Length: 138
Image (tube, rainbow, N blue to C red; front, side, top):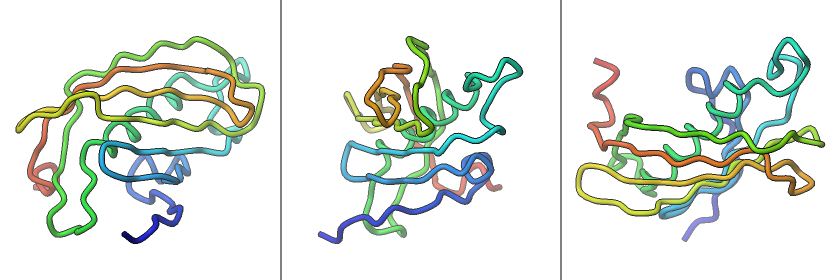
């Protein structure tokens, strides 16, 4: 199997937020982001939307792994519950997501966000529905 090289996610909001896909295999995804001022709220902390978007990206990717891009499925978020449990001490957020259970039409996933010092920042549970990969582009 070919080892995944880290790659920038350039599409849409993921690209705007400079997310980097650093791990992707069957049932698992890891996405990280180096924090800048654009990722912060007006009090200077990491914006909850930044963390939730990071979680949504990782939990989304973990359920649609397929080495052949011609066979890859699309997905849409059905439910996403995020728990903010700490503040990062570092400048990088790392989200690790895994599939908990998958069926023919939906899958359930969970995630943790930590900083580079392994401080737990957020946890999440998500549900996705599989779609035609081009369904939202029509």
